[in-house]
Length: 197
Image 1 (tube, rainbow, N blue to C red):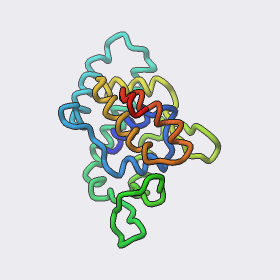
Image 2 (image 1 turned 90 degrees about the vertical axis):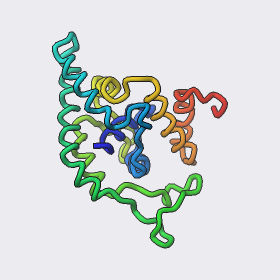
Image 3 (image 1 turned 45 degrees about the vertical axis):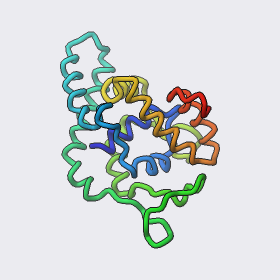
C-alpha cells in the first residue's frame, strides 16, 4: 500500500534510520510524490521490471530481497481497502482537531493510529533492525541488499530521491532535538539546498 511504500522510501532516504515516533508523524500525511515523479502507481511498473530482471546476473541475496519486497507489497495491496478506512490521526488536545504544530512541539504533531502502524510494522518487520541506543526505537534496514532493492524498485531516479529527502528535510526543520542536528544537514545536502544548509 501507499503507507508501506512511503515508509520504505523514508527509511531509505534517512541518514541512519528513523525513530518510530518520527515515522508515525511522517506517515500521517500519506506522503506520495507528485504524479510526474511517479507516485505509488509506479510500484506495479517497478515490480514488472524486477520480475523481468529475475533471470539476470543479480546476486541471489539481492533477488531474494526483491522477491520479499514484492510479496510484502502485494500483501499490502490486498489490505489497502481496509487500511484506507482505518488510517486516522490522533486528535490534538484542543477541540479534537488536527492542528499545525509549533516548531519543536513533537507532542502536538498528529500521528498515525497505532493499529495501522502495527499492521504496517509487522508486515515489514523482517526487513528491519533496531539501531541506535537501547530503547530509542530507531529503525533501519537489516541489510544493505534490502536498501538496494528499495532503491531499485521504489526510488529509481534522482527526482524521486530528492523529493523524499526534501520531505525529510521539511520534517527535521521543525524538530528541536538532537535528531535535527543529525538528519537536517544530510537531508539538505541531498536535496542540493545549499543555501539553507
